[in-house]
Amino acid sequence: VDEAEARHRRHRITRMSSFWGAVVKPGKKPTPLRTKESQLVMVLKQAALAPEGKVGGETSVLSVSVGGPDSERFVLCHLAPGKCEQWAIDLGFGPEEAVYFHLTGKAPVHLTGFFELDDDDDDDDDDDYDVDFDGEDEMGEEEEDEDEDEDRDDYEDAEEEEEEEDEEGDEDDEEDEDEEGVEDDDDNDEDGEDEEEEDDDDLDEE
Image (cartoon, rainbow, N blue to C red; front, side, top):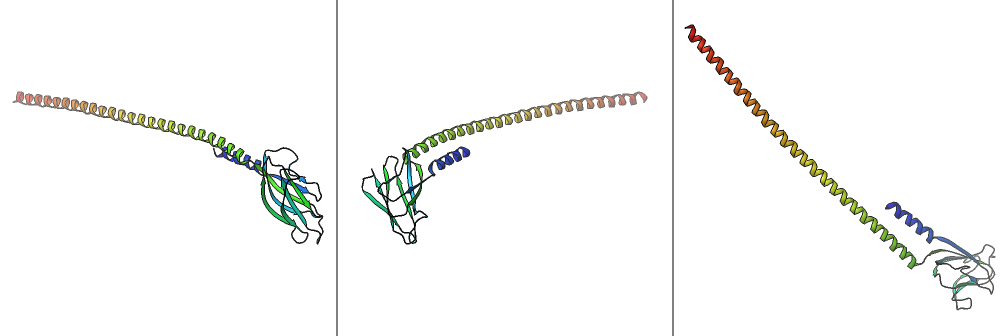
C-alpha cells in the first residue's frame, strides 16, 4: 500500500508542477497564454524584466485580459529597470479561459509559473484512488481475519493433542501401578510359601 501511495503522489506532483514560461513583448499585439488547447490550470507566479532593459529606462506596465484580446485589461504590475525589475504574482487561469497579456514600455517581460490539474479532475483521481485503497484495506482485513482463524484452530488442535497425551500418560501410569501391585502380591505369596515350607521342615526335624 505504501509503495502504491508513493507512486500516486509522484504521479500527481509530476502532473501538477509542469513549468510554464512566456516572453511578452511590448506592442499592440497581445500575447496569448495558450497556443493550443489544454485541460490544465495555469498559475502565474512571477513577472520580470528581460536583461536587455536599460537602467533608468521607461517603465513597463503589464496587464491581462480574460475573454479575448479586446476585453477589458487589468494591470498586474509596473516594472522599472534599476528600481523594480520583478514582481511576485499568484494568479490562476482556468483551462477554458481565453487569456491575453499586454505590455507597454520598451523592455520585454518574462512570465513564469506552472500548470496544475483542475480541482474537479484532481478530486476525481483522489476518489478513484481512495476506492482502490479501501478495497485493498478490506482485502487485507479479510486476510488478517483468516490468519487469526487459522491460528486459533491450530492452537485448539494443539491443546487437544496435549490433553490426549496427558490422558494416555495417566492411563499408562495406572497400568504400571497395577502391574507393580500384582508383582508385589506374587512376591508376597512366594515369600509366604517359602516360610511355610521352612516351618514344615523344622517340624519334621523335631
